[in-house]
Length: 430
Ligand SMILES: Cc1ncc(COP(=O)(O)O)c(C=O)c1O
Image (cartoon, rainbow, N blue to C red):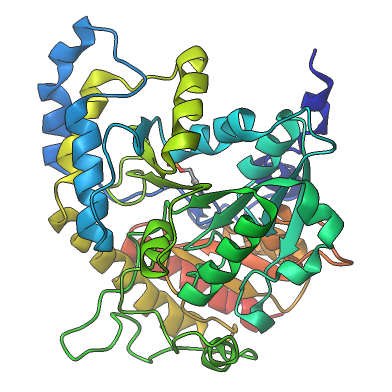
């Protein structure tokens, strides 16, 4: 067997299951799961209808490139959403079966094993697929710790020039999982400069791009009533120090292609990964896209032809309907904003909670070690949250997930509120 398989780490949820096996959850309380980032809002009916309407497509093999109609709908969506010229639907857009498989397979297509000791750079904490993709592509992952004291911005100085010289691919995630950080134009500029200098490909994971706080009619961000709740680290001070706007809340997050356009840069070595899973509450549909550098996508498409991952035709039809509609996405955002508002209000007196720039996560510093906190919360209050250290690696002398937990506000409002009340009660007693 491929020995690189032995280098893969157990997934965070496997580590969590092992941690929880050591205790018995309080049987008097129904379980509430906030550990996994799986959207739970209902799938819009019109998407289900479109899926059924597309069933005739099952009679044909789909192509890897997807239908012209789907690629066109994606290209039009990108133009509308980011205010950029519509990417060439034939060469700059490719449908994928959810961003996860694409983030993984992308490294297999990009990494040149004939070059000495290939490196893939990942943020830390991060979505674990990046690491597995790097390892199975024969590369070594190197980590950039993203920390609250620098407002979770990438700090390229953490890695020496010798590592950057060998870097062939970097994954970035904006809005970030788990911290929700949205990269500013200045951060993009710095990243483009690095990519242009060292020649590496940028894979920009943007699957949370549509889960942001809409501006209210009064001009503020949609949540919470108490305003921005910042803690020992003042996000606005940190932003100012980085020369970034004070708050990105109330605005759709900047995307990588948009940043390139604004900076007058080409899409060379730049590919974005997007998804309907969170935007449209269809994680089971497995539908997303990649867009950007036509030269890179041509090779990626070739790889995918052999990989055999063409999108099911009925899913393509449903995806066109989903990308063409924004009403359901705005409603989705409203539901998350309402949850953030209620949950933050409840947690604020006992935990240093702050609203993310975007996404559906709270990334919260814990008063005790993160795994002890998650385990005792599960045992006493039957609420599951994810220890931050499971989402990060030891790098540069620390695990940046230590003493953090990730709380995914995916449950319905009433359940999320009940979970917050239990978390508050639990934390007060510590
Ligand atoms: C950061 C990040 N990227 C990508 C994905 C994959 O999403 P999907 O494959 O549903 O598009 C997830 C899912 O949780 C994620 O958190």
